[in-house]
View 1 (spheres, rainbow, N blue to C red):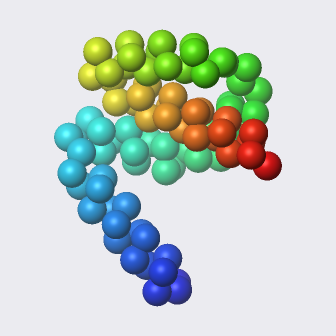
View 2: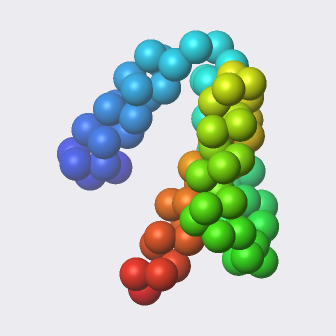
View 3: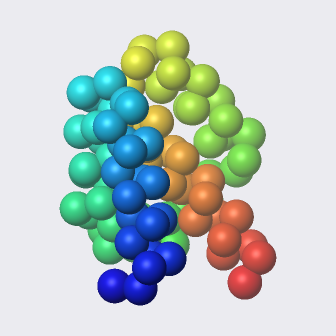
Length: 83
């Protein structure tokens, strides 16, 4: 692993450690299921407004899994739009 990747990985691990236990579980779920999430996002036709609405709902319910999935979907959508 290059020095830059190791540094980035260390930073990500530190940020995950700062999350509450449910947030850590959600991030682990995303990491373990990244291929599935990408496939799901390929088929998604959610608008930015829908993602934002559901994100607010997830925050209000402290639903870290939903929040992680929606954040992944938003980032994936932005990345796909910039390709």
